[in-house]
Image (cartoon, rainbow, N blue to C red; front, side, top):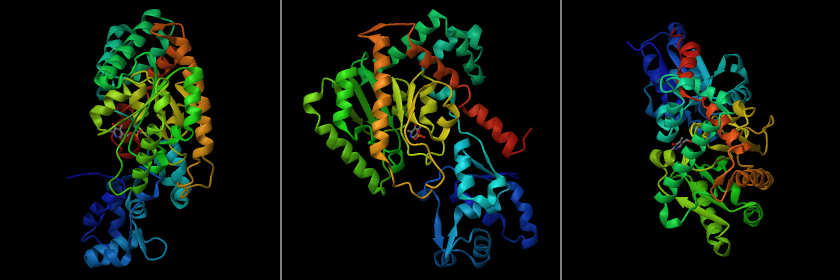
Length: 411
Ligand SMILES: *Cc1c(COP(=O)(O)O)cnc(C)c1O
């Protein structure tokens, strides 16, 4: 009795093949309205292709006929993405920028490709201390758990000194707890802390901030000390990911004499609980994928719910938040041609732009937090409040409403 099968990525498309069994060619068209397809990445590895030979060997002839009719790509291959697109009544990308990318990848289907920007479950990803902040100002926010859109009201409290103080304190308490969790490493809660933590994939450029380690040390020596936290897991079959981790470790080993200015820590076993601690404890969330390959990205959405300032390239969800003053944006902006060129990582140019952006943020941070004495009027706290307010859009409540309306036709 299932009305709509929603396929996330092409892997799920054999659900259609099964449903098409015993259905005549003419009637197959009618099946489409029961299928929706969401594409989650422009990266090539996310789009499965199999040879005609391989698939005809494992599928029943009746099933293979359907697969070939809808999924035949150039040459002798079956493309599951194409198959999913051809059998679905609704197709969507996961951010506005990803929709543009999909329009370029699949021009024939342009009219039918919509977008629903991803969101995160705010009640899961907002730390207890930030839940307490909105609770304390409940007359303004109302019930945030039920209505995350009301986070936008943070904007109205910008001039409220008590609110600014409460936001800063909640952040510092989260950060203190994180520092004591890692007590062996003697992190300092009054030192600028930036974190890169995600799945290790080449296009996400994990080692971008370490490209020119001398420059990074110079920023730390001239603008103020920096703590860098890394975490992430590579796919066991992804050699590139493995090389990145080794690169990071080598650079960290080369640091010995500069440890007072620059601490770099690599945390293993990145998972949801570690992610939750990181996104709510560091000062700055670093997101530096190579545009246009990040379809959406979600960790930054988790961080803004906790007032964590963004340092990011302009890609994925960030494109829709770039006018919200939630941090500093830098680096290459995607042009028209580079789909399929995800290995031209532009590490040199983009790392230099990253250092300039970092320089500005570090300077601004130490104007706010002078060895534990905080200037509550500082622009930094405006950034933190803008982040919280921006969280009103990037949550699963808004996202599900859009899926209901645009994709599932549920009133
Ligand atoms: C949020 C999250 C991700 C996804 O983060 P991106 O920014 O989309 O790369 C991956 N792993 C864990 C454990 C997460 O919590």
